[in-house]
Image 1 (cartoon, rainbow, N blue to C red):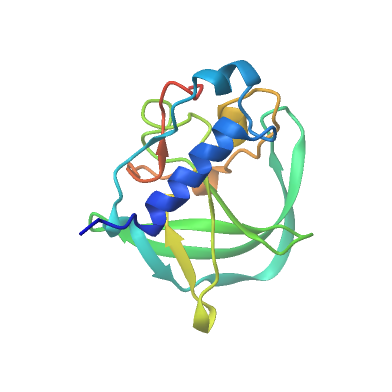
Image 2 (cartoon, rainbow, N blue to C red):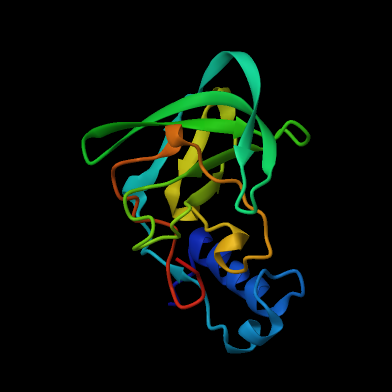
Length: 177
């Protein structure tokens, strides 16, 4: 009997292959030649939540600063709450005004030591009944963590957590602090 890889393991293997093999990879060609895979935390089932967003009454378009000093526009869409290690947490979800995609940039207590100092991102799938899947196992570093030529939105102050989220991508040999 063989163990089938989990959905998360398949996702990580596909992402590693993209970083290693594809011209669109954020890694330079020289870096791709020595690339052996991104660094990840072990899967953390306790950091998966189905959350009910609390939409803001007035959708406001805000500018998030980017790593290259520019700004990118998003709709400040909803607030979500969840509990980690018995502590209530809350983050703001942003929506891309052009695609409607839900975007969650955040910084946790491990930023700069365990994870990229400017933060990580999550894309939030919508579930039935208006709920969202908040699965920190899919938290990822922005491309600017691997290549300064990329412009990446910086998580706003309202999305800074004072706890560690030990799930998703973490720092390894391929990322900048």
